[in-house]
Length: 174
Image 1 (cartoon, rainbow, N blue to C red):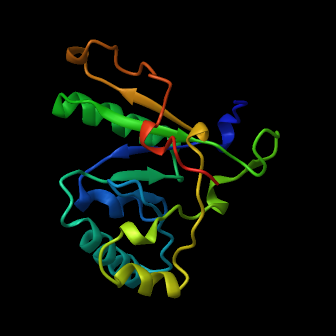
Image 2 (cartoon, rainbow, N blue to C red):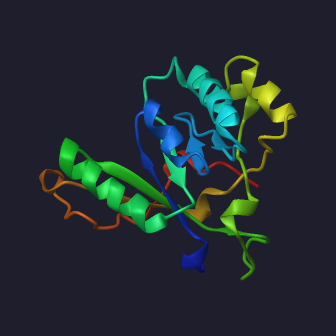
């Protein structure tokens, strides 16, 4: 796969209460729903926060937080979190071509959400979708690369990329 580094964004695992820190980025729920958050004001931030938390409340996993604002800051945050908590922090990079196999890349900001609505709980998501917060699109796993920062205890040096493709998305198609 040809890569376009300037078109990549990074995201990292955080607890559900921290996602609003990246309120202009993207939150990825544990079951791999990908939801774009682009609130216009504080009231919309709070409404979306309530919606997302409600959908994630029953999950045993933490969501993934994405930032498109400052990729390097996201990387540094991931490293610091791994060091502080002595645990692995998963960071993913994503590149999206307009047409698979062609060198015509789409800016991540133009692709707002990948969501399987049937997997989401309740009707709050649908209500927010009707208010044009979200739209739906699929992405093939070939365009998702994981770069994990690990503590020394994990046996891989900090900052060393694993370079693996996200396995859970392998069956998805555009």
